[in-house]
Length: 178
Figure 1 (tube, rainbow, N blue to C red):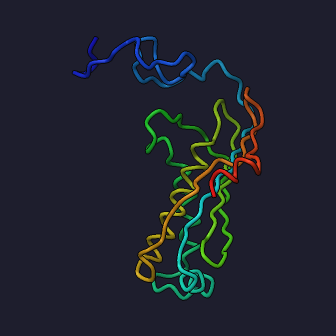
Figure 2: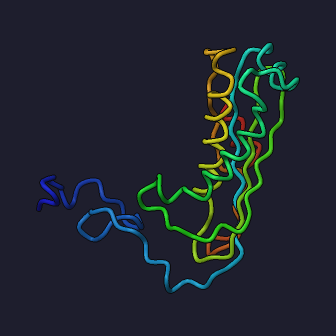
């Protein structure tokens, strides 16, 4: 069978329970209309690894482009609201709140994004997008001082609400990243 000129092997590689595939293996958006709206929250974190001199410049507000963390915070908030524009099968939803915070250490800046809503689907993708774009913004703001920066460890740390309940990343899972 073809779909827009692409051939699909209908039986190969399809795992039962994949919600974003129709019975023929084609991408589809999950129908969330039967679900009841509930309070949902997700927390995602990521890190921008950099030279200690760069973290010092950020902490002192001495980066030539301006207040790195203020700009990154606004970028993360905007990104959370635009996640469905970036991720093809992500549902648009009413984002109730977005908080983006930072922790500066010697060799990295940690980004934490928390997103909340009352809706039919979760906000994990919004939180992950917020953390990612805030990290990218830190890179952009600091690249003139340090082109060796590395963005990494973008991770869902917690999600609450919905049918699947609460998920919290364990310390054991964190050990796998390092």
